[in-house]
Image 1 (spheres, rainbow, N blue to C red):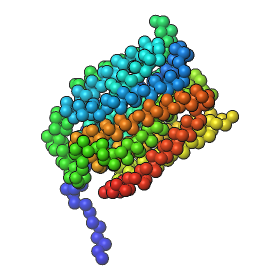
Image 2: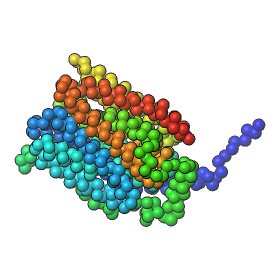
Image 3: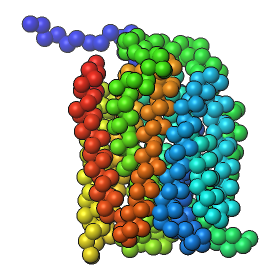
Image 4: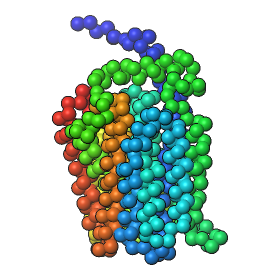
Length: 446
């Protein structure tokens, strides 16, 4: 047997190097700006969790009112997400992103004037309706640029912006609510909505001038660079084989409904953490808004690192199932541990906060890996509608979980029982991927 080392042909190595260089340029152009928009969207979506620390006392709202208002956002999200993604495919990403971003910024600022539960519910619904389409729209948009073997890292980098929003949002919310309280006769929580809504409106205007819909339209790429991107996408589409293109078949496609069930279970955990982390921190004995903000920031920073590292490792190893399931199991087990600790009479704040952080890291790290799955089965208009359908239906978990937590907190004075339930649901997501995705006959063993 010959022991002569087989070397990769130079032209293959050069082509790979050229493609990597072009995709570095693409990533630096697309991902930072999309990340900034996601930070703004996340701040405007979840700042209600921090505003709650003052808002409920000011307006005499119950925990259940807060839970319903926090969750009703996702009803608007559900109803308008699929139409938004269908519109994106027709009119392009930059028009869609501009519309979405400006509108959610305006609604965020209007929350300043809330005085009744009905007004609160209406504006939260509208915030969800106007933000609908941004997240799945960006997922779809990135598939126009990145072949499948590069997507998990791109998704992870983009989605880690939500964790960065947590890092920035906590201290920022604490500072605004503390330092601006009483300015021009308004409460700190009112200033929070104003000062976090304005940047979204400005960013939406900027999106019109900055974004490029498709690689072939990118005047910031040379002709050769455009060809590299288009060739990579063409090879990827050929390698993926035949996939569903007809969006009308989605509603009877068992693969799509399995993916919806998986993501629904994961988002039960994610939305619970998103809207209740400030309350958890307060319940373990830390009440100052600034301190709550900084602790949440550290937890979200860890979550951001988890998303990027897990997504990149999934790409390198060409494996999806266990990267998702392992992260979801870590999230669920850690949430159960947090529930146990919070149920003790003398809970150690440090240990409880470590469990909370581990739960956040596991849950968030599973999200970018999940989005590798839909495009293994769907293409064309089916992918556009399918991604939105999966995300919109799954995000109903964002309505149910916070509302359930509010009802439990009202009834028992604690969030412990709710955390147990959500922990079990998150572990179900891992089990569905381990068992169900294997049965779908994924070609690459995801």
